[in-house]
Amino acid sequence: MNLSYFWMILILSLQAMVPLVLTAVGEIIGETAGLFNIGLEGILLMSAFTGVMGAQFGGPWVGLLAGMLTGGAISFIFSVITTRFKGSQMIAGIGINLFAIGFVAFGMAARGVSSLPQGKRLFAIQTPVGMGISPIVIVALVVPFIAYYFLKRTRAGLMLKAVGENPEAADVAGIDVLRVRLLATTFGGILAGLAGAYISVSWVGSMTKDISQGRGFIALATVVFSGLNPLLALVGGFIFGFFESLAVWIRNMPALKGIPTQFIAMAPYVVTLLVVAGVIGRVRFPKALGEPYKRE
Image 1 (tube, one colour):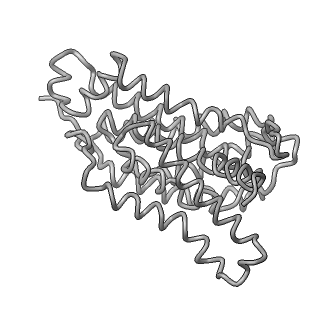
Image 2: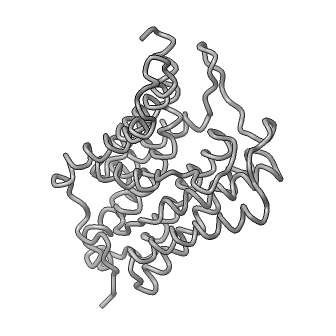
């Protein structure tokens, strides 16, 4: 492999990791506070749709903002259901995924959304190898470090951990458990919304009914791999992005045309499952994760 191929795969890997890293870091913040949301796939799908709609009407930045607002709104509703009304986090997350499938299918049938013209897509930063890279890639590289510092070095981060580990003790200490969980989950949804809008407005430049392609579930696997460490989430997202890009590169290699494309496309998912299977028993999650807090 010559140097140009190396840089090409590196750039493709960075682009592919963005939705995973942003979504995983947002979920890490929510899970640290005690809420887990398996509806990330639905958030990615709906924010990709609203993102491309926003970009059509107001340009790429409006599209990204629309996606972020969509992710934040969905997560806010999720957190209200699971905190104020003590609803099942599992059922609420499944509901988001099912709703997203119908919502996007109906919206695309009604509006016929497909590809974005070049002027409506987010600009790309040109690289020496001739491939453009989205500025959101830089955001995805920086966010895990900010999140790590926030969780490890700030008072607010310690409050999140206290709420996730022992909400009763946190409540006695004067922390509003429900408010902290609501804010943490909503912020995580904003990051997932940015990830979804990035896919349609910047990376792919179009919208399809299955544009998320299971990335919400892979982001959940990345959270498990990371052990709620944002920096390890960055590593996990890059691993998946690398193997996804490698699979694309292999599919386009003339010498490897005989290999069934389905097996090549499976590679990143198989690698992710193997990585997660190797760490699943060693990860320690907050004690109150998934348990609704009922004030005595």
